[in-house]
Length: 94
Image: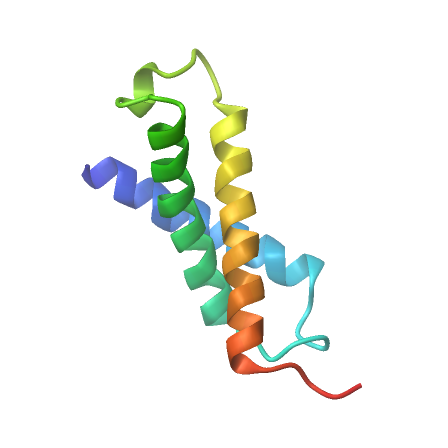
């Protein structure tokens, strides 16, 4: 469990930083720390949804090697969380 949380923190930080690189702050009011929190949430929620929907109770035994589908779910959930955060914080007028 500790390793899962540690990987969620590391991976979520990377996803958050990459998300801020792709969509910099001139388009929205989402601060960097909130983007990183959304990345971490995307990692945790995306992994949970993937395991629940595809009947994969032990994430280590789902696939051999890198589980690209799980990572895709994590990034998609993180993107949805950033969109929700942008809606809550409000967008700047162009």
